[in-house]
Image (cartoon, rainbow, N blue to C red; front, top):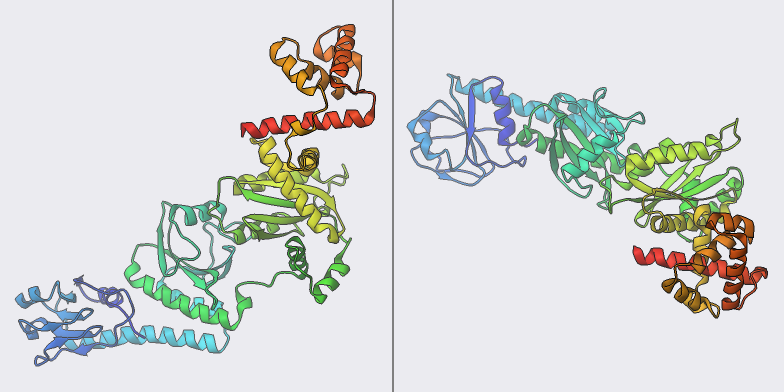
Amino acid sequence: MKLNADIIYHELKKKYKAEISGPKKEALVLGRPEFYMEDERTFLADHLYLATADHLPQRSGIQEGAVLVCIGEHINLKNYRNRLCLIVIRNKADFFKVYQYLQKVFDYYEEWEQKLYQDLFNDAGIHQMLADSGPVFQNPVNLLDQSFRFIAADAEQEKTISENGSLDPQAIDTFLSSYDLMTEKKGAIFIDSADHKVLCVNLFNRNNEYEGCLYIEQESRDTGREAPLAEYLASMLELAIARNPSVINDEQSSLKRVMQTLVEEMPLSHAQRLVLNAMNRKNTYVCVMLEYRHGQSPLPASYICDSFEEVFAGSFAFRNDQAITGFIAVAPLMDPKRKDYKANLNHNLNDFISRMRMNVGISNEFDDLFDIRIHYMQARSALENGRIMSPSGHLFYFASYALTEMIINSLGGLPAEAYFPTGLKKIFEHDRSSGVSYLETLKVFLEENLSYTAAAQRLYIHRSTLIDRISRIERELKIDLGDADQRLQLEMLLKAVDIEEILRMQ
């Protein structure tokens, strides 16, 4: 196995008083040490040399990437310090014992490499690969899946772990946003926060898709040694995952795939139709759509979906466009005393969207899986209309915005004014120049189901005054409020005017 100068220096420090200086490479390119002979003219790139200071020539050719371990001090060393990576052993040391020690260093890392290959080809599993790697890093070595769950480790973990075995949301927030760790980033990434230091390497499959993360806790920032070793271990783990993908990600349930297919309006396979027929009407669900409150979230969608399924038993969640679509089973939320589930649903959803900083739209309940697309549209409509009509809220039920959706759709793209009956414009003109609002009078009268007494009390006017105003309004509009169809049309128009006013203010 090839090493680098930082690894050599790290190991030499354990036995000798050593110092390192000069340019060096992080990549693992150095083979076993070579004796530097006095008659040699050039230090070759990516070669590791061992020499005593008094045997070095005053001048010599040096290629970029050469590394020299030198025993002792000599005036000639000033010609080498900035031209190659120089590791000086300052205390008195036997040349051949240093050479033997360096050989043991290479033996140690090659033994680790052999163990990894044995684990790989014997299908020992990633747990064994991490267990064999723990002594090399001398820090806890872990593997996280796409949802940041600890699925393999070389030691018991206690820090920053939630009840479901994942990094807790606060740790992930720091992990991603504060240090700009993106799941498409390759190579070792060092994170140094107030709470802990972590060295991470993202893992990818053959299609260059993110699979998980190698996660190594650190005591100090010795990345020159540990970063390339972590990248090497990550490459071996990627090979293990390629041989057996199920070690890091379980397959989605058949029903979940069916639900996603129906939401996306894709054709079902024969096998999916069998699943759909077998599972239909066995459970009652509500569909929810979750979106990030402020653009893109630093939390991966896979983590949010996994956390959602942990919170809501029997639920399913998957990414859909720029949002998360979920299906929550009602039965686990049912309160046997109240024979209702909405109190528990509200509590759990409010807690979840607060932690994840999301908004949510909720459909009506259903048990016919063939109606999934309809209830998906309900959840989306609730989210869109709730965001407009109640901008300070975060949890929106379709039932609360069904009329809004129906009215918006009924306008057919035309402004509400296009549907005004004769005289409605005169009502608006009257209100602009009068202290008496005919429009408010009309709205209150309709809201009170044509009750003169109730409407007069709300308006703080005498009943006879209200009767007079309503008569004038009916004459201006040329409609009969006692006619159910005319009254319904007017109520919808007034609601449409309110909606348009809200939209103008956005």
